[in-house]
Length: 269
Ligand SMILES: C[S@@+](CC[C@H](N)C(=O)[O-])C[C@H]1O[C@@H](n2cnc3c(N)ncnc32)[C@H](O)[C@@H]1O
Image (tube, rainbow, N blue to C red):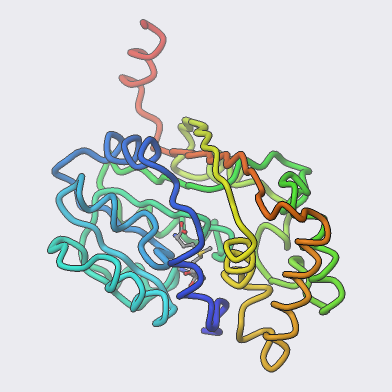
């Protein structure tokens, strides 16, 4: 499998913000303290590491060895994470798990096939939780929602880097995760939205940019230094104060198999 994030893992681990304690708390409550959770497309353990402190065990699976190495480093001596090289096509080879979480990784997969396999592998109460930015059908992949993004986009275009070149299933079909889950065996959906405020400096924004697959160090190759310099100059020309505020909005969509008792209990509340 192609390494989509070549050279990006250390930037990912350092500069991508975590989802925040409230998201982890929600995932822990959804799973239960005695559960084994599969984090599929775990990256450097953005979810796996904090979640492992709240559940019995985490199976952290990713096809990128560089991401797994960063994850192992960040997990330190946490005893209850197993890091495995694998992907959405090797689920049947995994040890048993009770629930699945996917943080910003589901769009890289054949989503229907993954959900069909999970229907075979998850126990009756098993949940599938998708964690990522809030995105409604018809919205662009990465709207210019953050103050630095128009500048970043201009520089990327000048270097021939286009977010839409990444061949993922969201771009290919435009079909929202909500709709894919709703049409799957995990059709009982719950959505929770969490907001955090972050402040960035110019080094943080450059590191963030290098953590994306479409502008990874491997993709930039020997243009990396020129890209970094051009982006730095453009960002500071646009905002000489060098401080950017971000409203980070994360949605957790949880899909479960329909359960008549749960539906009745919800209506009774
Ligand atoms: C944007 S990162 C997300 C990392 C982490 N889950 C997070 O929430 O920050 C996407 C990850 O999905 C992995 N990935 C790509 N294709 C995959 C597939 N078919 N199956 C499993 N993981 C995949 C990539 O290697 C990458 O580490």
